[in-house]
Image (cartoon, rainbow, N blue to C red; front, side):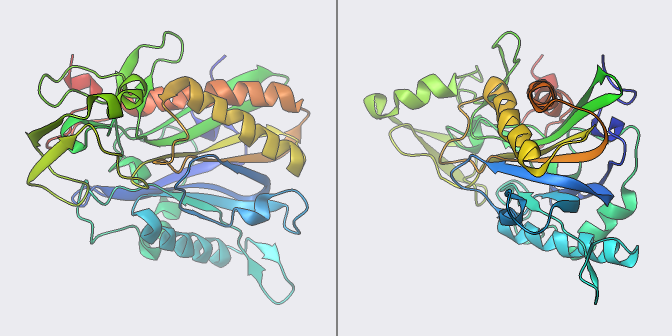
Length: 345
């Protein structure tokens, strides 16, 4: 059964805020748990941009985090976490070191510099603003927060890509347990309907506009090896761009990142297991996934309060992530040169 709001803020103790720059097509999203949540994470992609992931491993001193930042701007966007820390410190939240409370804010970023203005990126001020926006209830999806510049299907470059964004979903499992996810979809590959395998958004043939199965095309790149020229820009800007089917796609310019949260009481080891299992939601909804061109990263949070079996929570997290990915592309609106799913109907 879906949650009240149908998104991650159905989890008690979780709020979400966005801040974005519609002109530069970038932004950030915060998932706040100021009273502390047991945190974990799992990085699967080959080109991640992250912060504070080491302390999430079992055996590290710090157990609880106070927020998670998801941002555009590539590695530059990690600066927005400073604003999140400042906001939480001002409110008196953080890991108590006696001399000061230090907010713990893991973060992950997507590469969106080639979509809007690469000189304007999420910064500390934007991270602070996102915290001011944080709340429970309905949240913006699609072109919002960290999803402002998110795109998918980049096998043939911008000429064949589609607009994606940010999506969220939640489930109630009974016994008061809630599992929710929020995901920023900026994948190299295609987004699939995880129930049918049908492509929802992804690589399009730059000449015909028809969907191309990225996973199948990727396997045949070296055999075809034909070069075609199309109008469109590379990741760095506009102009004439070659769609080179015999070349390797550019690494590090894609990534799907997100957060899974539950109010089930889980240990740090169990929360990390949930983060690991949640990646199966990406495997069901993104194809191909976890490539060397992506930096796929998922965080997991337990706000506690309810009993919960880690396998049960992990299985629900898979569905929540897969549904959130689908919502991200269904809610997205197109931008110049990059259509969204709802505009192709």
